[in-house]
Length: 262
Image (cartoon, rainbow, N blue to C red; front, side):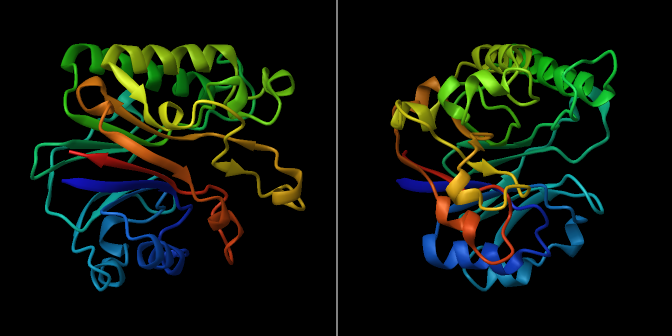
């Protein structure tokens, strides 16, 4: 049975609940994965989402930062979370749909501003987080699984507005890309978005600092949809909802969609 999934770093689910409702009303994905919810779980406005048919939610939350949630029209079972790099952050939650498909929702650490773990603890934490993701995928070897989220890395040259200018900028450095690719390979994951859209510049994030983000178009593809090889071939219709970046009081990320015929 086909289902459509979306992933979106919402940058405060309470502040931007109206935007979540707008997306759910206009796009109606079966599952919406949110990152950077910045809310304890009991403060997430679930009644607003349930009124639109999203009566199921699993989440991990914190006050003021991090936080991940999966909203679903379909029943979904909470199958746990991982605290990679022992940060004590709400950065992962996993759920299983009734057909057995497991959805992993990740918010990988951003890594600070300086790409050097010797002078920037946050960068070291990001690399350690990715290393432990790799080791976990290698040990558990996921099957019939989808991984989505803000992975805070734009891996390909055409996932950023300027490969040359961003090579030493956190989110596109070679060491980060290597760590992300290692995690992908360890789990046997396929990049669904790029399988569908193999060529051309593709972004899901534009900085708030840009005076006119749309005209400048200095974006990065930080938000991803992956699938294990056993179901990757069932994915299609990938897209990034760029107009959402221009909604009133928007997140700096745009939602990423994919449909699976499972």
